[in-house]
Image (cartoon, rainbow, N blue to C red; front, side, top):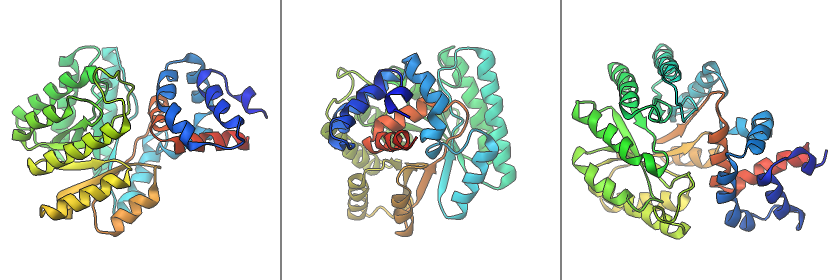
Length: 335
């Protein structure tokens, strides 16, 4: 079947154009064009309809540990048995109705109880937009506090994911509020593509935060985010160093081996032991690298999301690395 007939919408037609003139997938071209193109195309109803219909068969299942909690628990068990740390997320975001927020909280409570029964020390990673931030900041705070309190009873950790730049202030306020109430089983995320992140980190350091450092996966304007990858990478290294020297507990969340090497060299030079930090990577992305780091004695966490609402998560995975777009195209070409 023709790829052009399979693929409606702007995004994949343009990517196909890059491929068709050479007969092969040119990673350099995709690296230059794919990120903004994919993120802009995410809200296109034609793209969304196509990917939701065919995405699991075309590659989304590589990055998502199933659509049900049963599916996810089986994957988490396998990872834990092999020595990996894990977190999990019930995929979804941008919830705008309180009834839906309540259902989400109930679903996460079920996840916590299931993890406890199964003896899995997986922690939760949650988005405030899924817990009602767009309904109201107080709604998302109460929702999150319910989960953090239950997780604390189990000796379990909860990470607040970071989302678009306009949600950063509310996210950090929520984190500070929970810490001020005595909850130390909660962490936060900072994105190195945002100009503001170093100052945000410095303001958090008196709390000795648990901070995950990522590069950032949303489409942001140059008024708030570094447009050049080299600057994003430079800021990532800077955030790592400030966090380590400031006494934060650091999660180095990237698949970039140069950042791994920088972390290893910097922590050795400053006498920071390997068990004082962890590398975090995504389920289905560079599993051999994950295994290699684990074999070298480092703590490696595999972020293992699940759920039927996987579309936006999958689109961000495509945007992050041209290799992921190539994976999707190869599956299209085999149809």
